[in-house]
Image (cartoon, rainbow, N blue to C red; front, side, top):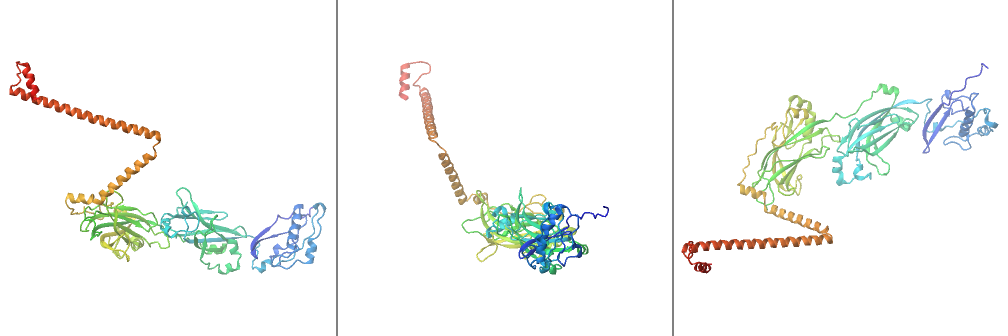
Length: 594
């Protein structure tokens, strides 16, 4: 009739994942299904089953009720009462067409024991993840995910490693490579990234953070870590420290490897919707990197020393900028030929570009100029005479912190030997040591080099251009041609082609010829050997014939020459008459003279 109540709404399900005795349980509470529910739930969830349920609903209700009151007790709860067991033991009506009687469920204090509350509905939670840095990352392409990075390979791996972050949740994915946030050249990258997600709890609420290695063609995952937001939100311990979340160091793991692939340092904020409105989201990103230019001018050397086996040396400089997170670029100067007293003049400018600050734990530390003095030879790389390391970390820091002032003044900042700030083009001396390294207990003094170093922002460098070496534009400052008092041309040539150089040429040529002969012999088959032998014999015969022909031709030419000269002498002496006379006497006289 008209008084028939409307059908009940569909299932109202409130899932909650929580840990009980180390096992993840799923607790489902259904409205309009059970007669008695845990006592501490809100009254809105406690009610008797409605009449008129469909056939499927009736069977589902009986199964759920039986699951709560079945023989063994639930973890942490009291055993079911006899009444409950009796109520669940009623037989289902035949055919399953009529609705069952009400099901009674014994209250279980499962949630009270673990300090968890079941909310009446899903609530929004704002998750803010702040990622500071990575630690001891393991490059995948070189070590195949072993998690073990050899100490000797760390500098090379760090110089070429580029990483970025991917943060994934159920509804959103952030890829830092798409926003050009790739950190280059370090195993200890500084990310300083902040992400915010709006998740609903209870529910599938987890955030996966993956550190990716950027490749030339494909990118590969170094490792990832998963943050379970739901476990934290319903944890009493976490709620006590939620206002001041701790700093976490989470290990990175990858499928197929049991060893950690590094770690991420981060912290997580969990806020309600009201708290999120009061505390606005703040990004912790580092200041944007800017390009700077480092200019180093090598003016001259003083007392450059080498062993006494040679009378003169032909020095040149090889300079590179290192410690800035990229593959170092090596630049060369010209050669000062035939230096005898160790005083070589160069007036040569080296120009390098770098980004500041670096994306590492210490943004200005470890940047230095590597100076090497080599002895020029005609064959090979040459010979390392001496070298030095000029640390410019403080110079880079000064240029970065005063970048706005430098742009306004249109100038750079210089340094002295100790790294203190000086005017641009301030000259200072640096000691050179044998072997090309820094000073040490076993390093021998090899003289000194006079140079000047300055750093300037990219905008200032464009307004004050300077060419490499002494090339155009040769200004800021102008580098004059060096006044090199070289010896005579013979001594200069002797400095180029010395005895050891000639010996090296001979040895190299001999080795090349020997290797080529061996290669040709290895490729010879018996038939080719016969052909080669025939060719050699034919060529030899041809050479002999040519020699014989040449000898015969020479003999004939000599004979004709002698006959002509003898005939002229006979005619001039009157033995032979050119106008006639005794032909026999003429012939006899001619034969006698010949």
